[in-house]
Every structure is written in structure tokens, then in C-alpha cells.
Length: 128
Image 1: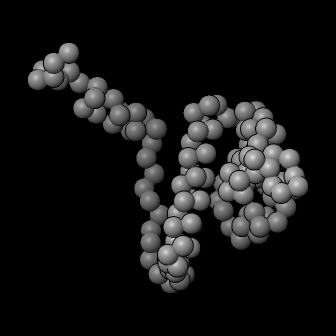
Image 2: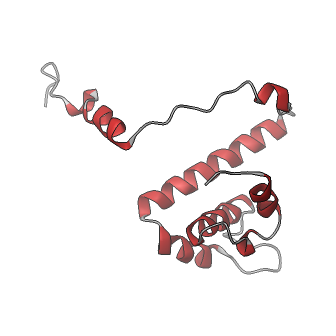
């Protein structure tokens, strides 16, 4: 999915009612929101939302994917707290426009690379 102004506006508003997000995308966004707002313990006066959000995630993603969604969400939460805490200004649009999109790596190329990594080869100098 391409993210445009409409999708960003939906994220700021009623993303669950936005028809262009799939149910899987809505579940991932809801989980990121639970982690970001620390709603796994429940907000003041509100019950925890983590059980329902996790159940929705499990309808669409396997355990490894859920870990990855959680890790990415946690990373961006850390980055936001780091940048905000140190008052790091975000780059303005003209600077951001100079950054090109990263290259796409095919699944087959990635698998071939990982299979060829050092840990997949016998090390004659390594004792058992």
C-alpha cells in the first residue's frame, strides 16, 4: 500500500473506519497504538486493550510477524522519545526530498544471502 495524505489523515483520526486499510493493517496499527500508549496495562480508568488487540493480530499474523510488528513499533517509540528528549528537530521537507527510497531486496536474494552467511559453514578452526 502506498501511504499518502489520506492514509496519514486516517491514522490521526478513525483508522479503524478507513476502508482502504485492510483488517490486517488495522490490527497492526491497533497493536502499535497499544504499545505506544502503554495500554497493555490499561489507561487511567480504562481496562487493558492488549488482549483484544493481540487476538486481532493473531487472526492475521504468525508469531514471528507479531514479534516483528512489536519490534518495529518499539523501535519507533524509542526513536521518538530519543529525538524528543534531546530536542532533535526533524528535517524539513526539502532535505527529506533529497533522500531516495531504499532498494528493494527480493525474498529469494535475501534467503540466498542468509544461507551463505558464515554461521552456515563449517569452521575448521572451531573446536566442538
